[in-house]
Image (cartoon, rainbow over all chains, first blue to last red; front, top):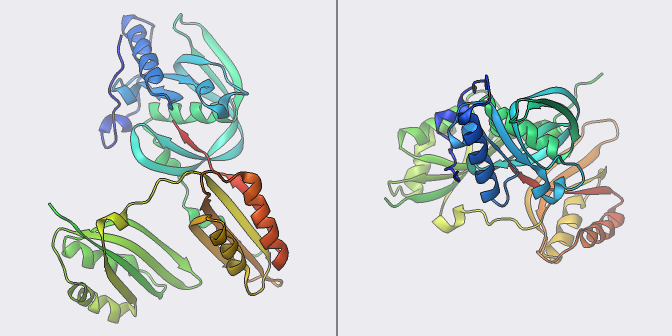
Length: 167
Length: 180
């Protein structure tokens, strides 16, 4: 298949809510290959969502093991169809950047631990717990399926030092 | 098309409409706001902006454009011309977030920043606040870029030495950017 061009903001396709995959067909299998080819092509990239290559459906590919932050906890290279986070707990602050938003990074709060469920390319449902780097990657990519960019999750920095109300 | 760049700072007692009045002056002259940061310090609202224009305004001419806003909102405005090269942030190499805090006294910012300067540690962002609590506490939050070959241990040594002198606490966290 092929390494695909990355859709870059302000392309409106990044702000769409993507459609669920109803059944794994030729289209889904080809899309999965293109996502993996594109993911492997960018050496620093650990996740990619279908809308980032212009396909408005709920499929992502991740590989947290490509980054040293993801060495300890990762599930390797995965294509995930209709992924969904079903549980969240505790918070970490991350500084994120995105292939679709070049030359900009921002501080974002993410859940530190999540439980995610998804379908593989054979249509089997899976569910796993993960935390840290891989959990952040999943949240970032799944956000893309709902038209949410990390910029939508940045909280103004001033809150860091804001005066607390008197109790 | 060639662009001309200026650094603009504005300070005024806080009230509704300061940003709007500055932005209006710029908008009416076709001037873009490039990088900017604005925040409330005490009850003073401050704005620092890099602005650009396709028209080559003179500094005095542009300053005059703020006359109305200055008078109505009692703003202090300063403006100077900068070169295009001065508008680009150099890519940081080794980013850390540093918190320094403790009982208030003279010389916290001086002692820490001097130690950083002597060791080539570049401050990219600095926020300080003196709390209004019964026992005022001074909080200093920084984002710093270390020289490429400096270790986290060395940064800790520099801070330990500086902070011991003035009796304050500190902590260090590496800032990692996730390219997702």
